[in-house]
Image (cartoon, rainbow, N blue to C red; front, side, top):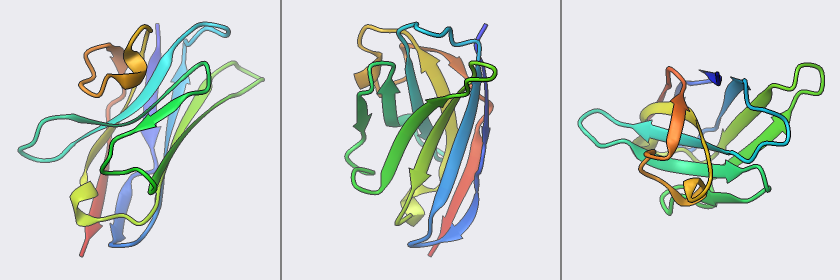
Amino acid sequence: QVHLVESGGGSVQTGGSLRLSCAASGVAVGSRHCMGWFRQAPGKEREGVATADSAGSATYADSVKGRFTISISRDRDNDNLTVTLQMNSLKPEDTAIYFCAAGLPPFCLRDYSGQRYNFWGQGTQVTVSS
């Protein structure tokens, strides 16, 4: 069973930076998988922000390209994954609850609806003030 726990949310002013982390346990070493960051703002649909797969590919929503970076690393001591979302040049429209998710290929890399992601974290709030 995959278990995901996000951390790193908070409040910043426009132009600031935040780094979100997702501790992912239960993702088997050598398995094909996708990890993604999604967000949901009040009154809006959930949307994909960035995804990455076990082959090293990454994709980004147009709204965050050039500002956000997703990365995945594995802890050699316990085989857990850490999925990081570095967010720079934050804007008020980035305000949302951010969720980490794990999914299985095929197609998960470009799935921004989240339908191909089976495991989700509890979310972390990001607030950007103007």
